[in-house]
Length: 294
Length: 294
Image 1 (cartoon, each protein chain N blue to C red):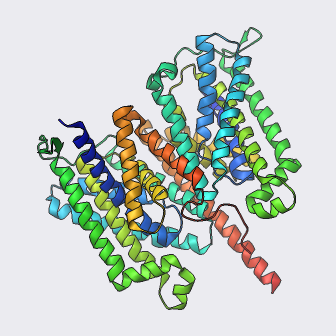
Image 2: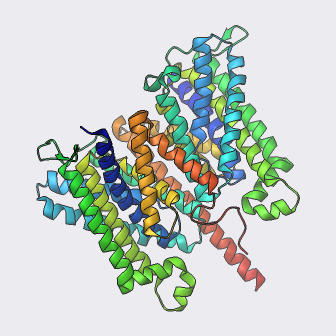
Image 3: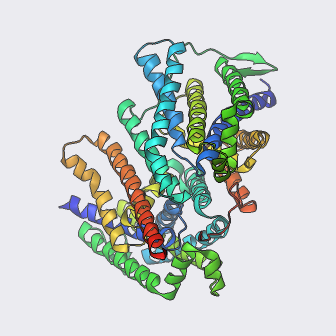
């Protein structure tokens, strides 16, 4: 087995999963303007509803995947409608919204733990077989599906944001809510659509992760933080910089796993994050000091 | 009776932890999620020193204070570059890195296996072995920390912290050194947290990295938020409430496997409600201001 080729393939697959999550996260971040840890709910929820419909109700994957994506979207919309929206009206600060979303995540994650247990579950009903040989390295079916599905979804959502009317409204609202309000663009509608897009993509990512490895109720938090790290590295705005951030993160993680040990993967991601925040503290908000609004 | 004493000792430890976090998160408005890291540094310092070298406990305590102070200084130098949600993210990253070091640097910290056989706390040959004597010891430390924090927060320095949490530029214009005040408060808070770690290590006599995870940091932060951010007495009652909560749930007849999740659900909901109250208060005070100016 060729180590370099294998590493490249692993990095490639991880990059696309990270990109899917961080893209879905950034869509919601643009609309809400705070770091929404509750987004991790969408990842976990998608995977567990698929498990429920596919394994426990014994439906085929073709029915259960769309159902779970739909459920996730409805659930996240409900959270937005009844929790985030009333709170944002109160003009809470962004860290307060972040703590609220953290509380929400804790609640939902533990409810999922209560229902399905804390142990890891698997979507796998098919036989585990050795992957295809490709340039001297192995790639499994699930990994190929992951990459293909991510690329298709990302192209579709890019088209949605760039070419449709609603996509343009989302972009207008995220760049300047007041001005777009003056032009008669409904902020609420844009937020709802970005939630549909973001939660749907996150649910897909959750299902793909669950199919590739296993799922645990706490997996969402870790993946979400990786996505946030990738977003901070890549900076806001252009999709290609986000992709670059994901690539850098995935490369660093896999190289650390190969040269040091896989247990240092987590620490590597956060050391990169700390370094980036240290040298580019403006992050993507551009705010550096606390100043009262007058 | 033994069990009640055990709970009382835990309440003391968590009171020290959360009150010391209150100095950073409440007074100077920097929401830190790295607190369990300093707690762990204190615990590991005393455990390693007393197991490997058999040094007296008070010396361990001093070294733990010094070491966590140095690390807190470095951490705050890095973290002070960011504010609000980025501060939360960067301290979260630091927490994960500290945890990874405890978990993976096996030659020194013994990794996930932890350090067993930590001797009990001794002062001048008197060993605090019985529960009642250890409770007295930890209550003394809690009272000391409480008194110290009370003095700090009601001093001019405390006023500077409160001012900078609202508006850094304005505080700076009054000739106060905002940068130093932030770092000083963080260092004091980290040092005080290590006292709790020392007590915990000698009390439980066995430590492993899982006691010092991100979840622990989130738990300490929720005590501070539920207790009212800047309210030392409120934080004491919040610590009592959250430590006794699982016992109360068990008393109602809930099996302990469910009780662990239920506790987290309840504190998640409490977090959401408390922040919601903050928003309502702010909203009302703004409305009042608006009507007064008219």
